[in-house]
Each structure stands twice: as structure tokens, then as C-alpha cells.
Image (tube, rainbow, N blue to C red):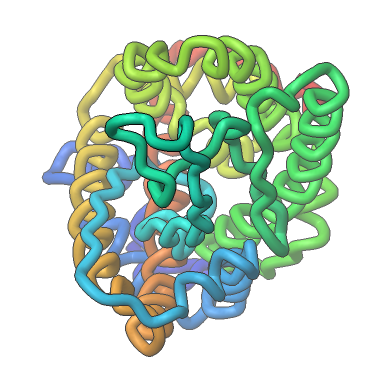
Length: 338
């Protein structure tokens, strides 16, 4: 295949026939990782996104830098995600909680220990809200309509910011892989509204589930298989919003259709889960001691995250091109507000 002037040399995904034959041969994951790696120079400016997001919350990052003893091993299995950062591969250490000295039950009571440590009579279960600068810990008893409203407002603000970042990030990567100018501001203006609507679907579901999980936390175990299934069925949605320039409903429909067909969609997801799992094991051990190990993990994570996201964008480009070459693919709803 001879590249056009607007097409970077070596791109074999812009022809429908080439895409179709490529999809049928072997697993798509190594091929698209290779493609993203080959284009790393043109994608390099986008490393700022996973790098900056890895530094926040600042309090969490600083806590991770603190020297620690022992080895911490995490296994983070990730379906393809629009943005991967340091926290996609490692868990920050829990903040050190102060121990309270318990009061004796009564002087001289058999078995009482006036110096026993514990949570004290006023203790309760707690939940944590992560802000860009620190994590706010609140007792569960304080959770009411007012707190619920503040959490909803915080999620809305995060959603707007996240939608803009994701739209510029994925849109720019998509354009660079096609040999076009990145134009992140254009991508934000074009894709951020529908990306915000996509986030609203999941944030809304999370808000609805939050009170139930606070009342009955054991239900979370029952929800895990459902969350895994949903993650598989719809991992391509945010990428299709950009790559296919499709509406939210159409992107959900196409992702669901690709998932049911299995094949390359399933293979790519499994490869991504395995690779991120292996990387998380190595990076968590590297960062478990804090200090220099965390900085080395950060240096590794930033380009790794960009390559994995670039590979997923490239794969979704191939899915769309291959699907578009088949007859009767259905009517697309391309309205941006959907």
C-alpha cells in the first residue's frame, strides 16, 4: 500500500480491505501496540496528561513517596481505558491513622485494660472523598442530603474537567495516528459535550448505587461480576465517540455489538487485562519502598499509558473501518447531543 501525502508512512489501517484482512490474522493487541510505539514521537506531547494525573491527589502522591518497609504487591486488571495513570497500576498506601487510648470499662473490672488501643466509643465507619490536593475522610453518620448534594456537585465538576481532558487527549491521539494535526482545542469543542454525557451515565449510576452500598456494603461483592461484564461490553464507548464521531447511544450500541461478536474485540480486551496485570505486579513492587522506586515507576507508567491508549485508539479505528466496509451496518445516530 502506497501512503498518501496526508498519511504517515507504514500505516496499514486506512484501507478497508487491509483492515479487514488484518483483523482476521492473529491477535490485534501486539500489532496496535507496535503501531502506537512506532508513532510515539508524534504522540509524545500527550504524555503530559498521564504524567500530571499521576501527581494528583498531591497528598496521595506525597504519601506514596514516603519510605516504607516491606514489599507491597498489587494486581490491577484493567480493561482498555481512555486515560491510564500511575494509580491505574499501583495503590497508594493508606494514611497512618492515630491510635486512641481506650477508657477502662470500670476500675478493677476483671479483664479490663486501661491502655488498650481501639477506635473509641465515638468511632464509626468512614468513607473517603479524593480531591486534587488531599483525601477527605468523613464518618458515615454524617452522610445526609446535604453531603449527598456536595458529592453530586463535586462529581459534576470532575465530570466537566474529565470530559474536556479526555476529549482533547483521545481526539488528539486519533488525529495524530491518522497523520493529521492534533488540534486539541478543536477536539475539546467537538467531543467534550458527548463525552460529558457518557460520564453522566456512569456517574449517575454511581450516585444511585452509593446509598445502597453504604447501607449494605456486602452487596458490592455481588456486583463485582456485573461490573466486569459491563466493563467488557462497553470499554470501547469513549473511543468510538472520538474515532467514529458517533453519538453516545450509537457508541453504546456499536460497542455492545462488537462485544457480542467476540473475536478481535474480546482478544484485545484479554490482552490488555493480562498486560496491565503483569505491569501492575512489577510496578507495585518497584514503588512499594517509596522514594526513588516511585519516581522510576512514574517514568515507566507515563509512556506505557500513552502507548496502551494509543493502541486502543488504533484498534477502534480498525474496528470502525472494518465494520464500515460490511453491508447493512445499520443507521448511525450521529447527533452530538445523544
